[in-house]
Image 1 (cartoon, helix red, strand yellow):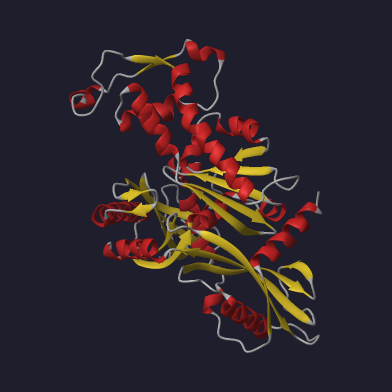
Image 2: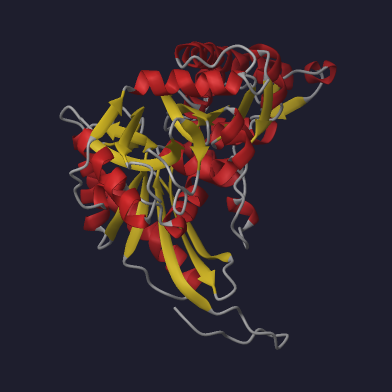
Length: 437
């Protein structure tokens, strides 16, 4: 898409130099976004679309036909709003047993000046050290470079060194779930430009550069899956997945009060909270169905005569699955080594993060600083898609526009390679973090 159109006020719409498509296939919703890069370099939302997800469970596609239809409708809605068509998208992935590791490789330079060819050789050497063990490599991206052991170098070209090294961030996934995503998108007549791990996308949208440098845990609380991503030294260094999310809280509400899921979700969103107040025993919530849905009561809906509950009752029901989830998050943080002085920052995102009072409740429960992460970096985000529930979608669009380097696209190298284990690199990163406090 190029050129500008006149607005009603006479001003011209910025010229769009290039467009990017993003698609997030979640357990509760399928959403699409089209963004454009303007001639001034700004990223601008051109269109968004959303449909309920019918064929996805815990991040895995279980009904390809139903998911393909939702994909097609979400993308078509975004295209209508944008006034243009797209043929390729970057797609998010939450399933497939995502795991993360850091590999560090070095090559000998003999004290020479580093040029682009040296960096290409280093990255190619790094590619040859990756051992997927039968799994699929989703990402293999260079993060920070080292010069003769000095870490944290972002742009080594033009400097001199005896040895040049790089930390490579690698994410693996099971092949079958990823292939199902690819096949589903292809059935909707779209090409897949890349399949991006959801934690990478969400982190791109909600984390600041300083947070990623100092160390932060990103907790993405989706409908059916909660991902914990540990960032340190500017890159993702650990992943932990919990098959539990906001939909489980919704199910607890539905079961406790005899509601349909749609009713329970509505009550959770409008009246739910993670914390209680003295007024909760007096604030009553009407459980009666909207008039147009009353005919559905006999089909799995509420059949008793109870029409209202107190907010205190609702909060009590919400807290049971929520506290279970917080317990699992605590275990995940411990397993990732997110402890001590360097393990003090947590960012919550995802649809469940919109629950009122959640940040305050988790701050007390976890004993750490907690904030809610919302997508940034894209102009024109509609209000409906500007909350934490759409962090992954916005991050996919940002990831696509950034076009990051992947070492799998670099030609082979024949230089001498020194390989370091992922565990050793992670320990080195944490030692560096501790030294900053």
